[in-house]
Image (tube, rainbow, N blue to C red):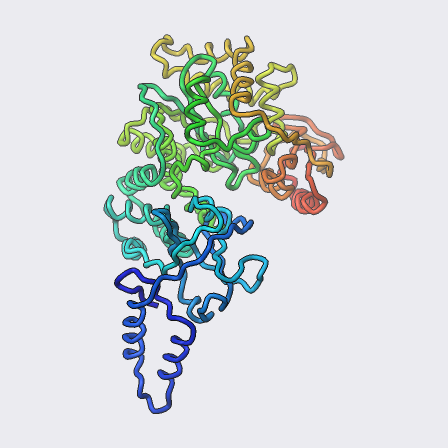
Length: 545
């Protein structure tokens, strides 16, 4: 279906398209398809846009904007709707693009209304009952550049910028995004990676701090329980450096920093709230999605996840674009290296490190890349409640706090503190240890929780539990990080805060046949069954007798 040249809604009123279709199908052939197409286009230029009232529909369609219309109730036939992949919804200077869904359920949307899913309603920003105009969305011009990329061409900075702007505006379908990602995964130059990073940072909001030193830390992920940020941030804040830590929710892991911090405090903060908290406490631990930092990245990730695309180029662009948008000036990157981590060899780590350093230098970020041990999970808990337990045990200096989590956090906090010109070279680790041991880091975390708003709901471990037992006597030689993460996710983490895995043994421990290796927690019998079935078929532990 073509768009009209004057921006009017292109769909014909009831009966018009059906009449044209019947005329085109006459046995005598008196109506050619070209004539019908021309007549449809000419008639569309004289029609008023469709006007409907907004209705909020309580359906989570993340990350897409989705709009719901009743079939036929607005004077349009179902055949005409099938031509619409995207529609424009606008009123009073506000507008969004949305994927159209047709419903026959009168409980979802009534005649004269357009229903908007949770994401679309929030992004449009207009109250229920507002009269909005509906029009067919034009196909994005940047798709031509995607076709060229599929053919093996190198794209210019402006072409990549146009693609990212359209993705951020939800003009692409998941299939089109997938085509772009697969084409980039096949071949991408360092210049294209740089252009992608800048375009993604520019596509959303950017925080400005107007100070020369704004520090941050990021781990590339892949290691269950590696919740060091929640220890590093209060240590750095207690020292006095500014560290506005915005984090994603979990993508493929059992918990992200935002998911775990949410067990303790509110993380759904506006940009103004983030700025106010940082002004008082020097730091924040917030969910970046609410602030709309590098929004195209969230859309890309939603397609990358089912396709299992996670190239170094896309990883670098994803991480650095969000740090740029968050206003960071100095950044520590943690790259765990291990047989079941995202990076599995030192040669891979060296290539990724160089790519991070190249792009960071070009965009003006001072960066320190640290290679760490990614051979097994960190800490004892995997899942939001369990990871929050471990974090607070470290901050409280509990005797039974997981030592590996404590040491990893101190290592990374030390490198962040080394950015402070007031500290003598190499004293960052000693200063981090001092702030943790003295209780100043714990006090900084307690102030952060109070400033962000303590969590009103009390999250507890799931009541459904099952222990996975060792099949033989021996020493734990290896733990599969990927499998442990899968088991925890099947149990319900991170959506179910109390779901996850309590690790009872780590690499090097001696175990006896029938002794528990780890305990699965779930908030439902179904989640426990899914996790138990996978863990029973493969515990993820390799034991040498």
